[in-house]
Length: 238
Image (cartoon, rainbow, N blue to C red; front, top):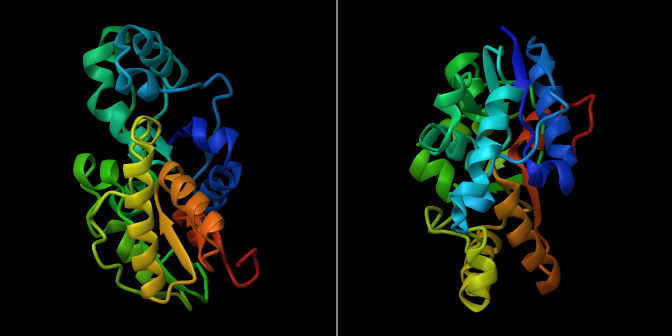
């Protein structure tokens, strides 16, 4: 199986450790991962802001960049959902389509058929199911099953977990007060749950929540789920 990593803009520019963790994890599980260096944005930001014509060339480029692979794995539910649901209507089918694009946890559970990935993370953690990963991709219990199999990890229940964190891409820019209030509500529940770490499959949401936590002085760290799954007793850990 030829597998390519689609790292996404947010991870590439602000959270490269998530992409590195995804590759480390997949290689530990015996997957050979390639990184097409020509990859760029998938066009989600343009499309969601009302510029489909600007997003179309990026969808076409995505199809060219990832042509020939058996699967594409992305450490982002948001971008994986956009490629799966919107690229076909934009342009991807016109240039031959793309291989199946999987969000990382879906690839682990549905393709590799694993849940215990040999991770070790001795901390109390809450999981935030991001909107795109839940509502468009339907990840459901997949990330939770992976977290429950991590040695040493205590998975706490996050009240109101299915509520949006308030980021929503440009929503946070257009409606900053509402966005901030929603984020603070999410953080308050995580803190009440006694969590040391809040994890998710989208660093865009974690960026929003992490910024609010730092400015609010909360003793809570945000971390991409890939980083937890890549941690081992002999490796980085936290």
